[in-house]
Image (tube, rainbow, N blue to C red; front, top):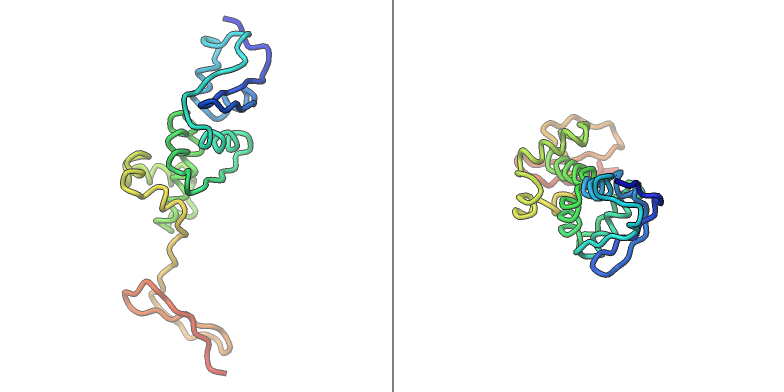
Length: 177
């Protein structure tokens, strides 16, 4: 088989053309690794077609280029499903890890891989988490506030956090002046 002579490629996604490099695509996506492997690629191919939606692909391509995820809530499910299809595993690990940390603050110091594995064990993977509503909701939700179980006297002039037993909502009060 012939090796591609040029790294530039056009990906036509549902009629919208994206110009990028095969190295960008293959570095992050197992789908594109297979598509552009020596077994399938030829030197004359400089365009490929994906039967998909361009909006989620644009977000994935940006992530593949820079490694930064900007995931709008309105497209989150479509982006995650497209990432699963294209094998952009690093994005899925990042999203699952953040969602798991938001649900379980004790995982704040664990690696993304460990937090994502725990997420999958608890929620059954991406499709089950989407179906149950855990994703994308828990990805966007801030981590729960830590619950205070014991109070100590605060130094004079400092603010004090007051919590009711079995109450998830705390209030902050300042001492009288």
